Image (cartoon, rainbow, N blue to C red; front, side, top):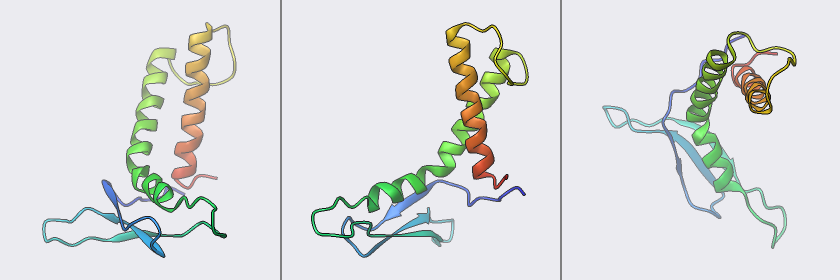
Length: 115
């Protein structure tokens, strides 16, 4: 299954401490926005940190993060010379790039709805 995502950029609307903040699309040519997520307070007790705005900002950054991961995957394939698989006899720098590309590809698959 390949998920179709709401295209970015997205923005956070609301303030820390509000019951709910929203992640919305930017206004289109007609000025319409679409709410793609609502993020509620995370603090369960007084004095606990509330990650509401940080969580909403992460959700809003998701389209750009996914695009960056795809670029990393393409660059790693070009540098390493093709499909990235098991360990070989690579320098530590290439091994770090290979490991990063594998992690990027796993995150891309998760974001795309792959099992």
